[in-house]
Image (cartoon, rainbow, N blue to C red; front, side, top):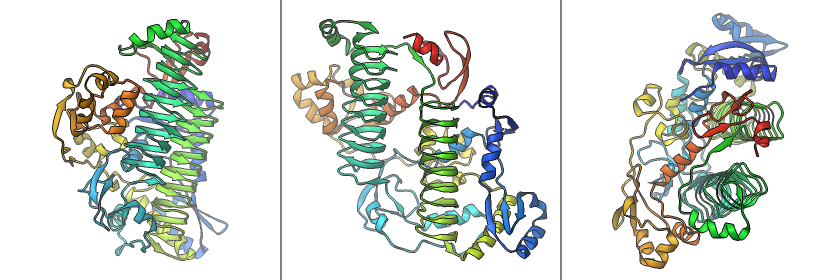
Length: 594
């Protein structure tokens, strides 16, 4: 993998007028990373403050003279200082991603009803897992540790092993069993991280309303799209990327407001174009039928994509201010090292929506002054929480709702809480377990089941060496009439198959196709075949996991590079590393080139 270079850190420092105050070496990768003055300012705002008596502070500081520099007492308040990170941004993100399985689904019995359901936890996982509908209404007192160990990871591990977890994260869905991290879904299959989708298959990151999309990533208000990436307000696009307000087109990249175009890139408000050349409607329709079934290699001009942003650096930013080392953000301000975020202010290393002053959190929403949260929402002044909601002043807690002043799920008074937490933090400082996201050994999943494997792939030996878990579980082979090698599939497209061999498309529902890449068998569903026939598409020869992986590799690398514009040669930042077959242009040259 590639890490952010020293040159990029220095370039951003100069452009943002934000001095680098320290260079640190990541304790995992040994890569250099910068600490900016703005980082120091942010971390100081994340300090924890406790109202305590002076006699307690005197006794506390006397016991902790060796680490006294981390504490400050003033005006009746003990302030615990937030240190700068010891991990570089990439390794911090890797750790957070290792806690999230979005797309690996399994069949397993519910530990309450014993019904066979769809899960994100393989049957060999040791956790108590309930059907999510029952889990949401289940009213049992959260498990509390019996023995408060000095090893804080062991305390949380003990709680997690005794706390029920939901089988999937879905809400208000209908006929959408094979989905996860999905809300308001109807008749959808194998879709993940989506909101308001209908009749979709194999869609990842469907934002807002999408309908009848298949094999798409990061689509927003789209319908009838196939094998496409990063679309907004589009209809009937096939094999397209980075387009908005386009329709009835094939093989487009970086196009806006186009319809009835084929194999074009970097055009706006055009119609009836092939290879960026204008045709009449009649000429276009005559040529297009013979072109669709050919392979197309596109030379693209790629650049840093932003809209209405101020002093922001990275890709896919909309209405952002002072947003740096972050991607796929909307309406954010003073956000760093984050991704897939909406409406956040003053947050670092965070993913989700509408939070302020949050740090190192994953799926944190509407939280304020919190740090190190996982799947927790609407909390205030809390640290190290998993599945906690609508609470405040929590420390190392799991699955609490509407609580305050709790430690390891135990209830305390405000006075007790303000004295116990500093003692725990002092011990954490000595154990060097302080102020980082949860230890990888607490993750629910194997590294190879998570988003970390997708963005930061590792071999099993590498992952274990870095203290990540690994899953060796293999799902049972599907029970089918027979397995069909991918090369045995008809070479014609589905409408032709329907006309000449209609029985084949019925029979293949009972077959499993052997993937041409992974050799892993996969099945088709009727909804999928109907889509292929309607739009005259080929039958897939690759497993859905491989198709998703190939789309992921077409997106930006997730690293910022300092490059030269291929037209004017000025220095600029880009998420696209220059290479054969593509030019990288600055914004001015990009528009002049059209």
